[in-house]
Image (cartoon, rainbow, N blue to C red; front, side):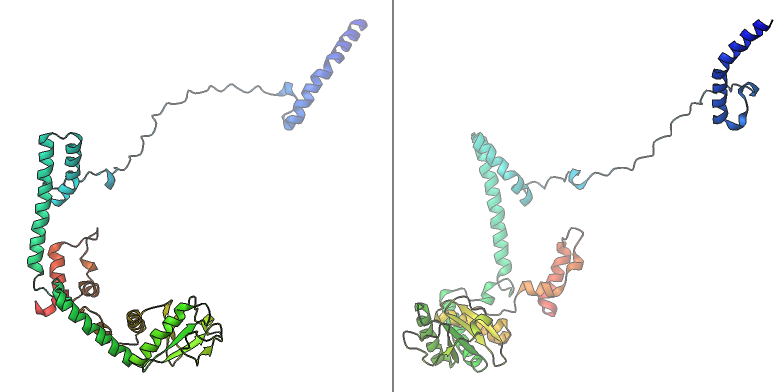
Length: 329
């Protein structure tokens, strides 16, 4: 009996460390649950089959409108200007690729159509232009050779008179170099001529402090920073100056007498040293008030435009006549 218990106890002691180890391990992992042989086995929970539900219906997509580029424009009216522009090259290609009598004859008729349309337009334009002060170029400038010559001479005479009067209000700086500047000597001769013709005042300034080789303007002044201040880049140079110290370039490089007249008038008008009346009297054209461009800009007709910037003829023509003629319609 003692031997059997001893063997049984030894067998139990041999197995206990494994069992205790397992139990102790569960204990430390599940502290408050107690020994495993006191635990109540959990009841098996019957798993329910997941209920099958239909997927949600997709959200309705917004109706896609065709892009403007995808919308095909209707073809132009037959034999219209747009139709000719689009199809005449096609008839030409066909006639040149396959020059049969029918293809060539058809192209020639289509070409004649385009020419006749242009002729009809030109005839109507001539009828409407005659006597219209805004459309008839005779109103603004003489068209015959004889009248053009007379008009040009009158404009030149007015220019000389305007420059002579301007000479009382402005003077001219003449920058030159005494050496290696042949054009400076030629420019000096022209300025001396203008002095005698209009009574202008010329103040000669030597860049290199040397006199002109031809002896003109012996009483010159030495450049003392004026050329740099006025940004003189080329010689000879002529600047218009005012008693108030303002200066305006007339030329940097040689100019003729006629060019000098024209430049002086242009610079004086640009800087508002002469009036509109004085300036226009020096131009060959007359009646500058008949200017469609300036009249329409002043009329402010933008409010008549549609979404594409086009103004329908039935709206534009009355507005145009009102802007040009006012109460004189």
